[in-house]
Amino acid sequence: MVLSQKELKEFLDEKYYQYNNVDFIETDPIQIPHSFTLKEDIEISAFLSATIAWGNRKMIIRNAKKMMSLIDNSPFDFILNSTIKDINAIDNFVHRTFNVVDFQFFIKSLKNIYKNHDGLENVFSNNFTDVKSAIAKFRKVFFEIQYPERTGRHVSNVEKNSAAKRINMFLMWMVRNDNRGVHFGLWNKIKSADLFLPLDVHTGNVSRKLGLLTRKQSDWKAVDEITANLRKFDEKDPVKYDFALFGLGVFEKF
Image 1 (cartoon, rainbow, N blue to C red):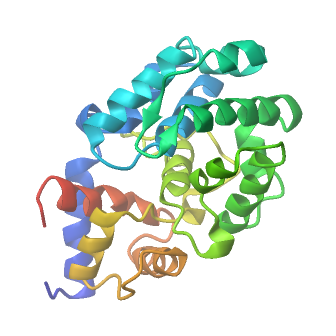
Image 2 (tube, rainbow, N blue to C red; image 1 turned 90 degrees about the vertical axis):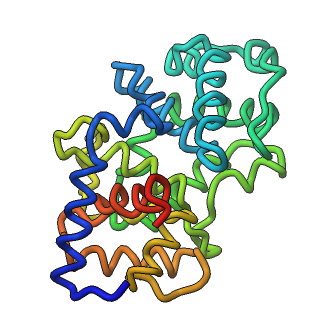
């Protein structure tokens, strides 16, 4: 599909408005944090849901709901007040390669983050310079307590050129606020302009067809390239076009 820059912007803007509305929530894992009102419940449930956001979307939503039920549908209270016995009592969870061992560690690490680092927002936002550095710092904090070797692969390592799709998606959920009822805008120390596209198979394929992405590998270099191109259309909010690219791929089989 060959379009001029002006035509491409108009096309993507149209698709952004088409898909960026509350109807989008019904088929997306973002519905999980939308079931909470407390800031900490929203960000914890969002982080856990984003962590397992790969594969069949119905399965992602079903398993994210199961995650919430296993922590009593009170994420922040469970993270703060659960004992080792409570955490070890969680003995039945699996989503693809993410299993109960990983889930138990995630709870322990989040407990460390909220008790000793003033929460998820602070870890990402404190002394913020750019998103890539913030993700790298977050990973170091997340694994500063003893962890199972197998769990290391479930938090992306941008220092090894990972695309970090799920963390970028989580940050998009927390930071963006365009008053259209989908994203939360809970964090204000990071700007929408700083965000990077959550690059997955759908957004990658559509971006390549539209000439927005030339790199074949879906890694951080590709994330950097596609986000830089989207900034030409909206430098203050480039990742708003995730709705357009994702919608075109998932709903229109573009």
